[in-house]
View 1 (tube, rainbow, N blue to C red):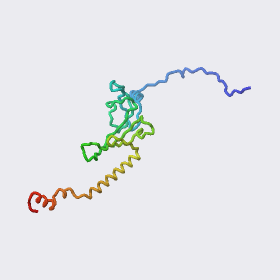
View 2 (view 1 turned 135 degrees about the vertical axis):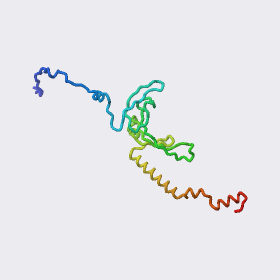
View 3 (view 1 turned 90 degrees about the vertical axis):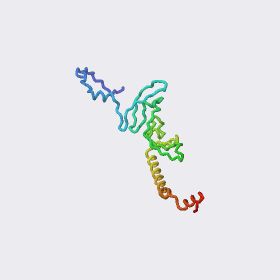
View 4 (view 1 turned 180 degrees about the horizontal axis):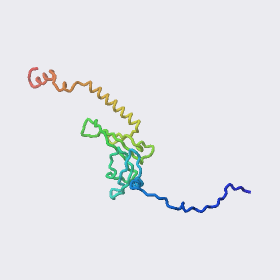
Length: 187
């Protein structure tokens, strides 16, 4: 014969107190807090316009890092997966021909919908050289900054060996004599 480990207890009728409504009222502050989603520190909630450019689009709200300078409502995206964040850039133009205007730019960047193994799936440093973009995490970005600082020190060390510009502007006696000879004068 099977033994039952469960015993049935008689069902008790519910008391009238258990069915009474619980007094509850939201204050104005409480209603706003209940309606507003919480946003993690360092971020803000911003509107994003989503949809085809031929349509009015839909407005959605996303968390946006405080360093982001993109106007997500003005820069429409086709889908929420296309939302990216970009910070203010710093640029340096090393081209000898300044009309080329291909500066090296660095800025913070983040593509939240990128594949998890992509470094841009987390906030990163983007280095854009003539539309070729490399991304660096914090450690690699700091190493890059150290390399750039060392390069700057090398440039300074080399330039400091050049003669003073004020001396180069004054023609030497030999240059002056050559000019006189070329003009038909005496040395």
